[in-house]
Image (cartoon, rainbow, N blue to C red):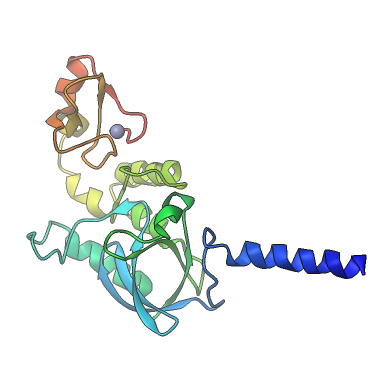
Length: 221
Ligand SMILES: [Zn+2]
């Protein structure tokens, strides 16, 4: 009898673990079929018979279809790159603890996820940054942040994708890059850093350095 009780208890605990909403939802082993790519960091896949929009975590690619913005330079290339990666493919989704409070959705109702190509386990979010088709998005914390920043630095160094177009610019480019600071404090940031606000002031990086300011440790501008 005691044995039965313990077994029952174990089953309840295990069920609890697997159905806990904080954890990632169960997904078919073969993954979710990709329906179409929306832009460089968003695609639609079929989840339980419904088209669901997925926004890839931790990357920022140039806009290509935003209704209120002009097509940004490179936006179409980024979008084509994702199409090339995902056309006719299925993906497995993984989630980040950082988004569990919003049930892994953003304010537009898109699923926030890391995507892995089912056929070969290619880590899609990472691949976009590695090939230079997007930046690491540092405004919000996520568990692959350090890794993505490293891929971005490598892609810049190798001059691939988006970074290839900067080939002809002089090596001092890093100094003329625009950075942002809040007006107080000693740190300066990238535009998409979580510490950059609408009130932040843009200045050239070289000017920030000459004023004795230091690069933020989170966004590493
Ligand atoms: Zn920063």
